[in-house]
Image 1: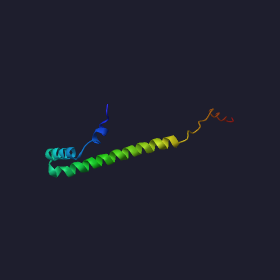
Image 2: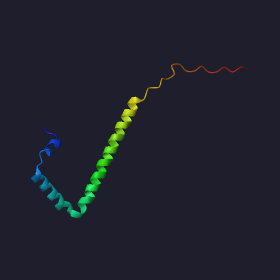
Image 3: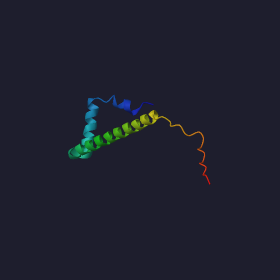
Image 4: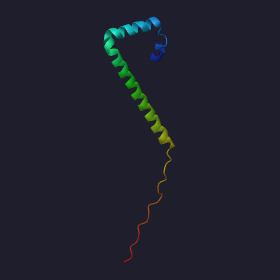
Length: 80
């Protein structure tokens, strides 16, 4: 099965024009900038989230495991 990403690599000028024409007919010329802005915001938020996850994973892998106490402390004896 061919991934969808590779299908977009074979899009020529005529196909791009047809896609843009269909988008223009569906949404109108006034809503296209709003859609592009929303798409850009969504992509930026996605990239920020991905970089945050990568940073957390990187930081977690760098943290050293703190040694735990091997034996519990002896209780203090009170003098009577």
